[in-house]
Length: 457
Image (cartoon, rainbow, N blue to C red):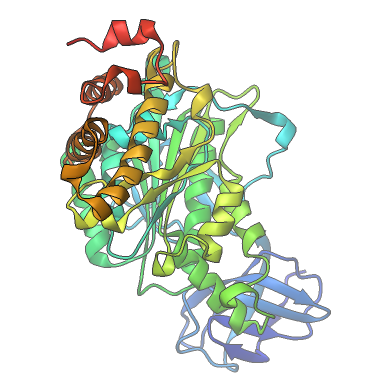
């Protein structure tokens, strides 16, 4: 029998407290009807004896502890999904906001997803081409991987996200069955308009599902937005057998909302005020990506986060690094030199790239060339430090060749326009051209056969 409750115990921030409730379940959706007939939804986030704590998706503004009714639905939060979601734009709770009307056909899906048994995971192989040389060659994105991008306030991660969504492709037979789920969390309406306009202009919108959560939306929507996006990705990947790339920003906005909610619940804070369960909460998002045995589809996760104070040891990037398989780090120093995208390759890595590049995937020279470029650029950094002490004119001839390589590497390999889409072959050839600036004896990561085949005068 469905019961209705007419009074709240108290309201605090986005939370409502109700006592004397029987048979409520964690994650259950509660329907709230206000005095004027307005309806809102809330999700149960805490159960303690007869006390129920629920977070209201539309916010608690205008609500009173009296003159309302609460009805427990017995169901978790669900969104309706069908193949028609491709090319559509939704808000943070999965409602269409593009004027195209609701999704009538399809099925309801729990946004909390289904846990993936680690034994049923397939090891990621193959690669996703982003058209960006620094990523494709040196930190290759592998299909089924979780590869975050660590940025900072004011760095061009917004432009980089839009470029990746517009240019990302798969090779081979999977190319036509590839789509992207894009989620923007806590963004301004100006930024949301930028993403919409960019996807429309590049023709990428037909293969994109967008979820937009604005900065002025109720804070509770920031918790549902990433889960709605990942539920859409799971539906397309594991039920419609598509290869899905999930691009999501900004994870920091999500974590800030989590900290605010934890404070409202009066929980004991952990590092920098974040809740002690931040790690497991982030893992509940990141671990929904992967490839399942016996399934043709896949989910590749590319989350972006801004590091507060550019601190890579901050809890958000720190815990993210433990869960994911590498990271791409954007540099404020490179950005100050007008280098786009400002990818700092030295702290960046993709732990799975070794199994998705080379012969049969990209090109046989790829892993060796990547090692040589990384080694050469790391020496450039050391030689630049020496040049600041003794002056570049007093460097040896070999060191001066490294200085020339560094300028060419940053000016032509790392740097490309926001609309430039380079193929893997173009990026590899560009890397070989740069190695011509170095003496042959310095190319210690390459075999004589590769040098003869690719390093032509």
